[in-house]
Length: 330
Image (spheres, rainbow, N blue to C red):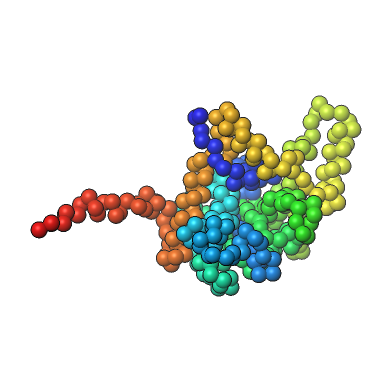
């Protein structure tokens, strides 16, 4: 097999919504994308999960593998890694350094991983991604507060995207929540008139929307299933126009053509059979793992950690052992 498939841990790369947003970034529709904000907030006090709850026998219980440092990368591995991957994808690069804070403040039940972390990643050219992962509150201010826990904001000079993946059935939404991808366009560009009579008076250049000072309504991202095809029937085109209009009005919700996790699994099995390179391959998995290790190092050591330090990790003791003079038996 030419390529080793990566485990199914990156469904966002298989989401048609995230792929559409990546194309918008590539085509400069959002302008210069320089900032990304991400959050993944859970409430393990009011909404405990068997996956994260302390069990008898402490570290000896294999089911506690998420809450001990000996077996877990903590929140950086469980949550942040997914959103670092989105950031790498959108920026088209990996971070240069990371700095952050983390602590164990509320879930003091014997675990030793942090219950809240806050990280900032610096990318080439000064682009930055900030991440907040906490375990005591699930509120998400994105999407007008309609969804809880996680989401990403991708910010460019010409527009912003709020996006999150869909989730499965749960106690609050038996059918689950669909993916959301909202596009906010920036106010029109302004320029200064050179006429002496109108000195320092701004005018709108090439405006396609007016900034009235009020709230700007989001534009739902349209995926390829709503693209108009000149060869399709009149009724087919009219149906797509209707769906577009209803989606814009918020009457219809956005939906993936196929569940991203199902697409990811199918792609994984295809890669196993054919050797085709998956969208989330072993190099992407390695970059995420490096980000987790260095993020935890930054929080534990209280310093800015550069990503090129990974080249030296684990080598220093070996170097010393080679240069150290052997002890005398006399």
